[in-house]
Image (cartoon, rainbow over all chains, first blue to last red; front, side, top):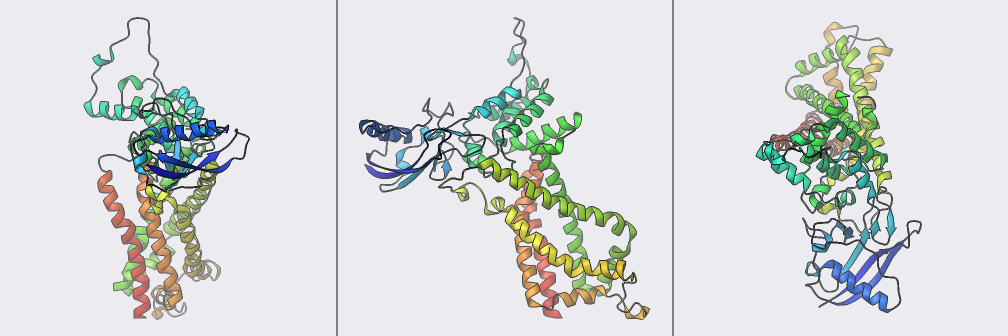
Length: 249
Length: 228
């Protein structure tokens, strides 16, 4: 069992200034997940009549991308290729002090405590992260269209992006290029995505810029911290797509 | 195509193009400078050609000055935009675990190189402009009234590296340039969309370039300091 000191960002609402508050937690099992440890803390806070710590979570199995904690200076904590819900307390030692903060980006404003508003990602998706398909009943079976194995694999890899925002949180510029490039790439690599390719990349990048995300300076932090291992290669592909679309007009 | 420079990708593309241009210029610059190590005559002739050729002076030099200014101004614009995009800083941030020092400190290394450029321009360019275009001496000779006196460029170069302080500044500046290039070289290719099967080889070459070019500049300065 472990005793820990948690330094958690507490912020009542989006207008509150917020600050780090210390919480000692005791008898934490190394087999607990990080979110279960927070559940234990919240149970104690509720029993004491205090406001529990608000944090995002849903599937708790690394699929939904909802959990969004910046733990000890890294998105989703010290391990790689996992989300915060997949992080276990065995990654820490008895007596450790753990900083828990929300994603930091102008485009991800804090709603409460550790919860940030990531609807900017939704708006980027709505700007072009889709293909228009005729659903009148004569839709062609996707499997009937031959696709190179290499492209199919790359498109699939890009499509594994869960939109958690760890890339933005880890980037010193709060750039969303890895997320947007994954969404652009998953379609750009497939024939189904070609019809709307030009508009897609122009509109998604335009929306990304309007949301206030920073410029990519290729530090590679996003790729390292991405729980799904989305490659920087996607950013280069989006750059090519965008430049070609811009010159095309 | 309109408004491409207003987009984040467009600005990075322009930044990368100016960087690639400056990296090509560095190769040319160090190649000419290196001739001073083994041939005074060749260095003098090349310097005189570069300093008096109308194409170099009238077209290439203004493009180079524009490229340098554009690269630095755009660098500051991008940095300001990026700083504003973060807002509140993390209380705990382990950036060293996911990115290199060079990639996070391009502004710092860039500003040092910019400051060095000021000294470098004062040392050579301002002097050249004064002699050629204010005093009107286009001869390039040590004594403009004596054609036997020989070109002045080699002697002027050697004179600049007598001071150990100046040599020290040059060494530090070129180390910082190497750090800047170690990230900037690959970054510029990524920004223009070149990340493919050749990227591994390119990364290897970038290390050779980024360390080799500044090392040659340092060698030239140190060589002239100790052989003067």
